[in-house]
Amino acid sequence: MSYTKLNYRDVESVRDGMHFLREPLETEKLGVTVVECEPGWTSPEHDHADQDHEEVYLLLEGEATVTIDGESVELESGDAVRVPAGATRQIETGDVESTFVLAGAS
Image 1 (cartoon, rainbow, N blue to C red):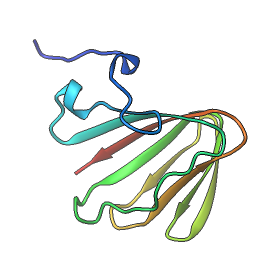
Image 2: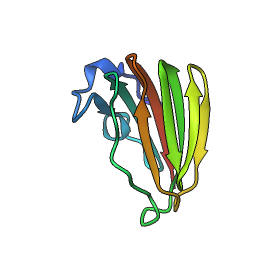
Image 3: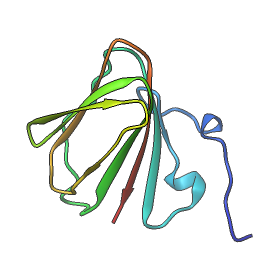
Image 4: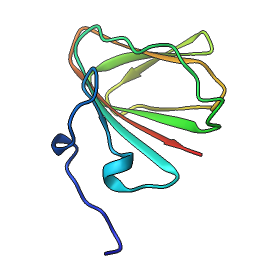
């Protein structure tokens, strides 16, 4: 078979509503995560310098602020932001449930 198909809801949520899809999709260079966030959810501050992969955060529903290297970037539904590998990043959602798709590549 030349493709892999799944519904992210069939992948067990690991922590804080995070559905990691890399392994179930059998991707080699692309990571995809769907995050279903409660209002007021905050991710840990981190970077991906050691893995040397950039990420794109796409906010499907809700509202959020992504802090990138200390700069706050406000996102509304439909907005996407690219984050370089070495930049620190942290997501904080607003007062409503929010859903993100996070994609990272190396």
